[in-house]
Amino acid sequence: MSAYSFRIHSLFMRTCIEIEANFEVILAENNCSRSGRQLNMVDHRRVDATHHLSSYEVMLPIWSGSPPTLRPFEQWRPLRGLPSPHGKGAPISWYQDYNTSKHDRHDAFKKANLKNLILSVAGLLVIVTSQFGAHDFGAGTPAIVWSNGYQPMRASIGELFRVNYPTDWAEDEIYNFNWSDIKDQPNRFGRIDFDAIPA
Image (cartoon, rainbow, N blue to C red; front, top):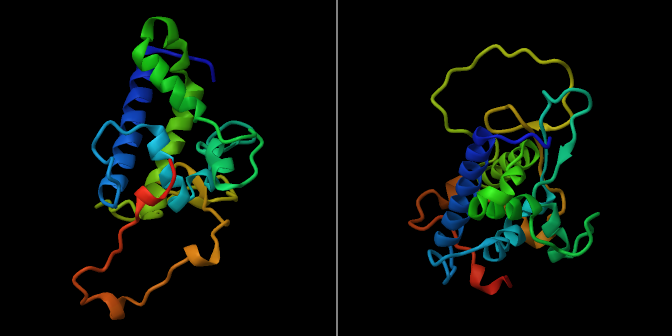
């Protein structure tokens, strides 16, 4: 997990840039007055309040032995008043390592390691899954798939990782709709007021 290389560094950078881009789009498409102006992870963690990113669990089943359960945004749980083994709400460690290795590649190159790459890919999967579920919108055709047995989580986008969705939704956070009631409305989707959520 501590292995590092130029290729891992490149993939780690690209993954974290994609994470930032997804956060930016979520905030820009909703009510966030700071949207598009040098947002950082303090601003991005507002998305956890609405999407429960810190409650997602991810597993990579092809891991040898018992695959660990990855919780890439778990360090934000206490900010929502939820227990976390990491204590108080803290910055995301793998994201801090991304920033450090991006700005000081000479001294912090080792922080762009395999562990952080896997956590960042799991983080990107969580963000995309929180918006689209397991729908990858691909043009592919169904295929025969071999499985090496029972997997304890649901298939994710791309079906490489497995995901446990949050179960900590409050009653007022859960929504449902009847498509026939809203299909003809010009504005079917509400906007989240991220300015009202403390950073």
